[in-house]
Length: 401
Ligand SMILES: Cc1ncc(COP(=O)(O)O)c(C=O)c1O
Image 1: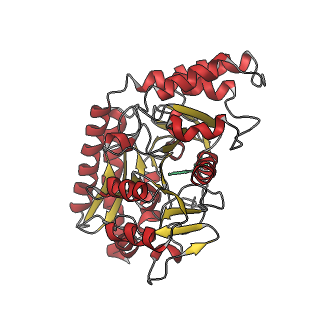
Image 2: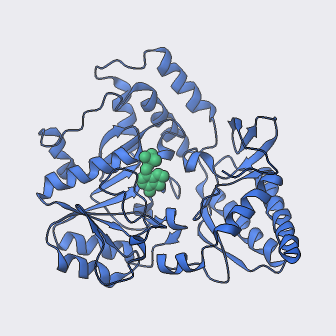
């Protein structure tokens, strides 16, 4: 994160929609633990539940009731993906999903979206946004070891890829390509990928580590009418406590039960993580998703208006609870368009001006703004005001340059 006027940002504490720096200054937060604290920082019920679990013994090694309760409370939100395995990070969940898909299909290849981010394990740490491979400039499909890339939102490329290769165990994709700037899936695209993959005998993995529980109390893919075989969830399921899960249909997940696939892990399903999941699941049921989405849509409109008043044309992509701001009149429909209009200097300048005005944001190239269920009108008004102030300063600075 860049310095502001020679000063580093060091966070001291976080509560609800706010973070405080080491000088005691309060900011509205839009990074929210990289999207993890969907209910707001330090949600009291989650803190109480995890404290109680810690005090009862954090590592029993034996089966414990809380693990079953947490799995049941998660599965109650995920329809036919009724089997749950807890791990400690989204990357692990994706890794386990890929391993399971290979074991079930007897195939080797994993297909992932060019510019998608599915964690840091070798299988998928390839072709991320910003890399040369992600651009897919030539007809030669980028392949590294057992991973191959396809173009998000390109309907024809899915068929092409499956016709080129009969060794694809799974396709992994996000419901929205969030890490490349909240690029929405085109109408019918997710269903098309799922249908083509199934026709060719491959497993469909929805990577919902970021989007799960952000649009409604469940999977974003279900909300969008798509039924994967497996899904990876993390972040929001524990509201900031380290936990993630692989969830799947009983048929596919059976490979764990009959010992075809190893999924051992010292900390998997530990009581603190399970307490976080169980309490978070109880809370998401009470969240008024329509109201937060509406507040987010208002903020998106206010931000664009604030820049327009300064003569700077911007637009946004994504949803009310997670969106990206772009310069220009039209949000990108695919990664090629995103890479063409992304403006890292603008992003960093805006991050610094927002910080000056009392809002924290991610300073990354394809950054995004998250809202939590705790972002109330007061926090949102502060946010909109900070964007207006930032837009004014940025316009003045660019006139001076
Ligand atoms: C879509 C997606 N998948 C996987 C991951 C990896 O999760 P983790 O950072 O918990 O390993 C992330 C992290 O941001 C993500 O956004």
